[in-house]
Length: 194
Image 1 (cartoon, one colour):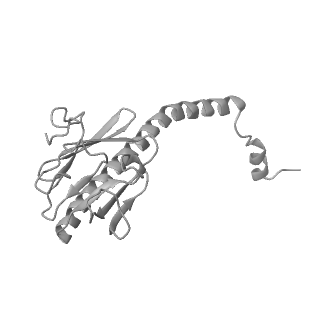
Image 2 (cartoon, rainbow, N blue to C red):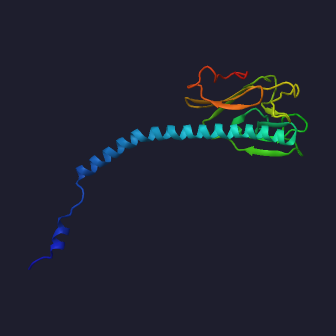
Image 3 (cartoon, rainbow, N blue to C red):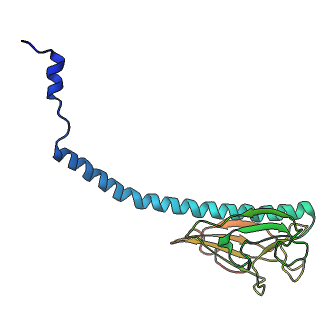
């Protein structure tokens, strides 16, 4: 009795040997060992960049709303003491100039807490203030609590592991994002605009 040609070829297909499977698993483990740390660094850099860009956008929104309303508009940390930017931030029209969004004051934007592992530190010319804030007057210029003619400048630093990005705010009120690794002279963490 003859067997059909297809049936005899099916009997010859056996799959992988144990050695072949171990070699493939070993190669996969090596590739994962190389790729996972790089992927983790990529994710961390993306989180840091996203946080910096969102903060930068909020600063620009604060300035634009102050010009539009012709009033003082503040951006403050969202925590109860207004001292920790990592808890998020609030942009609002500060009717009573106390850097806290009180009942009846219009909140323009509220940002949630930043991802874990990101630290935010700020240094501004109004370092005597108990709360941290960025304030613009109706002309689109920064101001301190001392008055609308007293400009506020400084730096907000964002750190995650070894990566650092900064937002520099000059006396005119214009923010810019910089990287201290590529701009070591002009991207220092100081309260002035340089």
